[in-house]
Structure formats: C-alpha cells, structure tokens
Image (tube, rainbow, N blue to C red; front, side, top):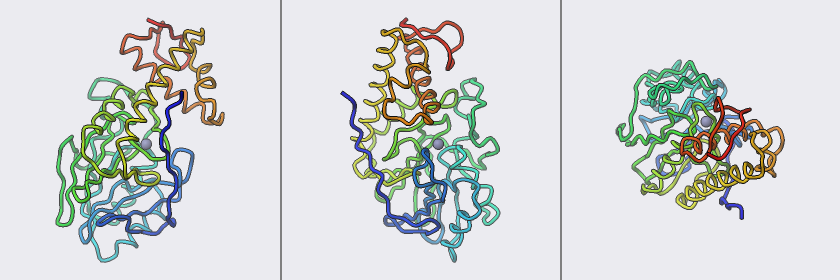
Length: 300
Ligand SMILES: [Zn+2]
C-alpha cells in the first residue's frame, strides 16, 4: 500500500511582485518554473526596515530587480542561503551589486561532504562562497527579526533551514516541500543524512514551514512522517526488485516509479542510487565494485 503524502500545490501569486504572506514575512517568486521548482524560486524577505533575504534564487536580473523594487526605502542587512543549487544561490552575486549585505550559509557547494573527505563534483553553484559561515544553532538577528540556523544536510551536504522566532516559522529550502519529495542525488546528496534531518524536524516545535518552492505547510509533522515512510517504502521496493532478480537501477526505476513521466527517470535513478548507498552503508545490500548507477546490487 503506497504511502499517501498530503501534497499541496495551490499558490496565489504574481511573478515579480513582493507580497506579504505572514506577519513580518514577504515573498517574491522568480519566473523559473520547472518540474523541480514548481512555479519557481520563492525568495523570502524577513522583517521590515532592515531585512533579511533568504535564497536570492537563480542569476535572474529581472527577479533581482523586482526584489530591489519591492524594498525601496528599506535596507537588506543579511542574505541567507539554504543551499547551493542553481535555483537558490547564484542570485546572490547580482543582489550584492545593490547591497553591502553579506551572504550567510553553511559553506560552499559540497561543504558537508568535503568535511568528511568525500570529493564532490556534482552540479550545483560552484562559484558561491559564503561571506559568513553558519553552524547549527547559530542565531542571526536584527532589530525586526531573529533567525536560528538549523543544519539539515541530505538534499545537499550544506543544506540549512532558518527558523524565524516570530510565528515559529521554519524556512525549509528544498529539505521539506509541500508539493514534492526532495531529490537526493549522490555524491553530495545523502539519504542517511536526509533521514536524520527529517527526524530532527520531528523533534522540533516549528509551527509552519515555508519551502523555497510552492505553498507553506501549516501542519508540518504529518508531512515529515509521510516523507520518512515514503523513503522506507522505496527501500522495500528496492529489496523486492532484487529478490525478483532486478539488480540494476535502470531496471528498477520503471518498476518503482510507475506514475513518473519517462523524462524524469534520470532524477529518479539518482534517488534510487541514494537509497541503495544508504542500504549498503546499513549492511543490507552489497555491491561488487563501485557504488554507481550501472552496478549490480545484491542482498548482503
Ligand atoms: Zn535544491
């Protein structure tokens, strides 16, 4: 029986318009819709007067101009970055042409993996270097807002959520989204870290999540629980494939993702690889040779 995740996609917005969405929280959405970004990247603005901006988005000058236009008479004091995918951090460079605000993030792309001695060449915004490094539990504040950094590796090894004290609002980046599961793509993506980061959220008291893409989640725990159960189900499906002598990821994907359009199979294959990497680390599966997409996997 498939896990039901209570997905939601409805969102009222207009591209290029800074809109207040909660007390002390505004958002403007970039026009970069895709199967990975839904309507586009939501750039959040915290506070009034001296504001923080979360995830300036892609290197899109129209989007950055809309953000600057919407903040006339105010000052950006901090730029916070959840992670270094191309739809989140490259806008920092454009935004910093208009402001002296420093960028705050866990580290450059691959930071969490590099700390463990794992090389990371996978995609991402390799040019981004945060001005200020943040760590789990760090508090960043200004006159009208206070934010706690919540380190949530998994989707990327540098992924960080930001919790605004007002309204117990957690800005979840791509860690938890209301309309889709997160892509976990090795080597920088890590299923074990992702599951731990979901568990971490279950132990917190955040009241509402604001993901970078799509609508807010105002009843977060059932979502987080469903995402954990969904991954467990994927693990069961992989074991089932192997028991039925389907040893390769490319043959598992069409069996596991029966409703997914074929053009999304490569992304799904990366997620299956992430799950397999986790199962190998747990000692459930074994691989001969390299842990990679076209290897054969067996029960350990
Ligand atoms: Zn991302």
